[in-house]
Image (cartoon, rainbow, N blue to C red):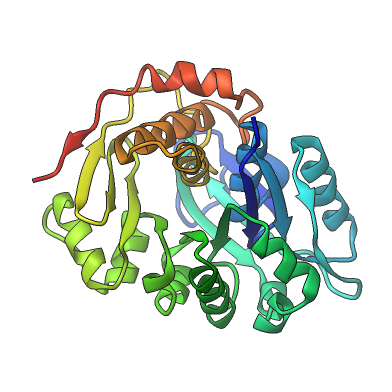
Length: 315
């Protein structure tokens, strides 16, 4: 069977995560431990998709340093085709997060100035144009400049290609504002949905109509352990994540939702199965201390989907 060809444009950098050992004490030194691994919203999704059997190519700016080599090694290990734009005199971007003892995020700092050098003209290079044209699906993340995101989404729309985006953070989600009409899906949490929509909702069921009003035809809004929401065209539904006995680390959970959802979408599955697949992929991820679970595979995902309850239609 021919594997779907996915091209991912966005963040591929180093993630540094400190985990507090006990109760978090703001404004003070907290005992804990430190961990580093390759990360980035687009790169996490790309590695998950590759481990799930799809043919995935990653395009991202990178520095000419040891961190960049570590990212390249992670791509090879996951089976991702790596096509970076390397700036030899620059450092590879980084994301540094502090987590509470239960794995929830306290605060994070993103040092990602290099991504602004990914200008729309990079998309006009022949190799990149050929890659986009040969893709079945394009994924981008909001680490890239707004004008580059708009140019990429517009190119996909003109070629009739499906295109999805990962919102990354509330501060970066707004970079997608000029691309919404050309996107099939945006993957976001409620804070990112709030930034895109320009206001909050009283009830979670209002997200689809509010995001449609902002110009988006389809999207997924994750809400931690609460029901996730998916909508496309006139359909909207929710799926409740199964309860977890233990939480490893929430880093990468939203990127896993994107990967699991798009795996099913690329296979022509209906919206409810796409969301259940995304929720199941996130469940595998948060059980792991890694942003991309070492247990992610088609067989593991199928077992996890069986534990996800049926979708409920939003009125």
